[in-house]
Image (cartoon, rainbow, N blue to C red; front, side, top):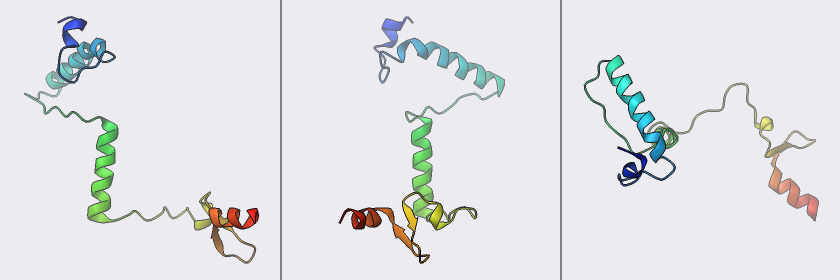
Length: 98
């Protein structure tokens, strides 16, 4: 199948058509190497998979606690006032502009 034919496949863009054969060869080699008879194709990319996994984690397990070495004042949006109170940078900037 040449590049022009691959362009007619559902979901194959002009930019991806030349790369499709290489990806298919890598997938075929992996199936043979690990002796898998088949695989499930997913239309999502790795990035979307990571985002979906994180969303599931938030829903079912809740937000993550900050790492022990991270403190409130380490965050760039939080400023430490002279009396030791943390203030939101947007509030501090608004006060400075008055």
